Image (cartoon, rainbow over all chains, first blue to last red; front, side, top):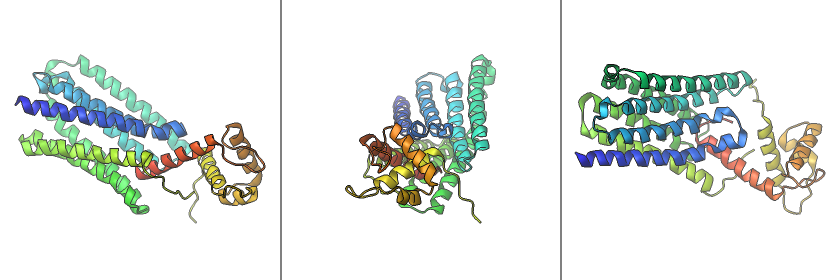
Length: 225
Length: 91
């Protein structure tokens, strides 16, 4: 049992490290353009990494399911997926009004996240015990966010088919399957679903890392201007 | 008729630097040819070239060639553009 917990902590730490490396790549479009609509990706992956750190910490606690940490990691992870979904939603229409709307949405999301975190620290122990029920609904929402992003990226790939652009939709699909698999684990406590979720998550993050690395450090591709 | 999306300044700078870097090493850069490639009015092209010179990205305004900084910026710009395409984001 101790080994399972240790394995889970290791997976969480590795996932967090990959996410923070991804943030370094994902912040580059923002550094170059200084456009706030490109903040969604680094924020999304940054929060995802933070949620894995919190998850690892929560697993090292004795009463995992009842701690504030488990709520916190669920909340931060959900916001990570919401940041990613809104980034893709607003990327479709880069006009002045949508840029303003994106800035407002980004600010509102940040305020909502910090308000919820404050509420969490002031919540009573009895309300925290609803975690097992609440996480099922929240994870269903996470799956919807991830499949929205997957469909969006898949449509971009279909519009301009290129072998290099198929990997990102695949990564988001894998991340969605990982969340879906975790849902099964929390419903029927299946160990296969749990292990599968962790393995698929690592595969998804490896896909993102590989695409990012190959783009910035791979051979230069002649671009059409 | 399909509407052509407006380019922002960074995209125009990127297109302009790409057009300036596309010529051969000893070939003289003709601004009117660059104007056709970048698709901007000539007076605006001249002001963009002047801005790029102020930023240290091109050497001179009459027959502009990319500086080391300009080459580096263009490489980074292409990589970021490629990354955004791969991520399924439009720019």
